[in-house]
Image (cartoon, rainbow, N blue to C red; front, side, top):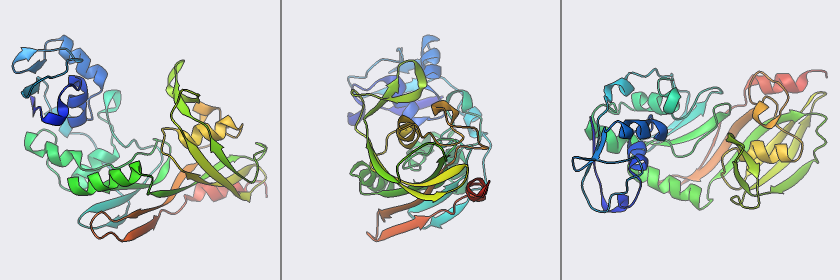
Length: 299
């Protein structure tokens, strides 16, 4: 059984949003189904997934949380760690948060909980700790640097830095050698969801502003390596922006990139202010050997 006391900041937010915030492994679709079965309640009265509490009270979901505690985990590749932060080199193919139909898949979030020895999600007292963790996200196929917080104060500070664009991120990516991309450029195109495919995004004048800088770093016979600096942090931003110029990343079929063993995008380095000391940190994750191998083919 999941129980949550609605606070002032929760008022007039959807019940399914509040539940998913506390239990990210559950998709909103799953929560909606449970609510339809009468298993979601507010102050002991059944409510729908879209119910918005107008007063303080207890939100309850009749669900066995122990099933979520027995998910597999990964051995994390730690780049940096102290009492406030842990910075991970995420492998390609691993999801950051397991939810919905992927709830029982090994993820960075479940592995981080185990690594930091946080209590399992089946223990209600641990929910405050479980919200500390992932500061930003990387797509499943993207490898590289991922910053995680060990406590709420660090999480709030780092999220503020991302929001205020005080974090500098650098990616490396491979595109096809015949893409015809200029050596350098700024892509300034707003991004919104593709109404025809919920998995994709599209350039849309009704979307959110997004800017990406790129520089050509190296040329191979079949692939070019780009240094990419996203100035904003939209979902799929780098992938979509490059595809919009006719230069999709290799290994990105969603945006019509040519086949590759994986999505050829790597979060290479990051720079931010330490949430406690205020010192500027600059951390890097080595580029996977596959990038150089593909760049060298045909030379």
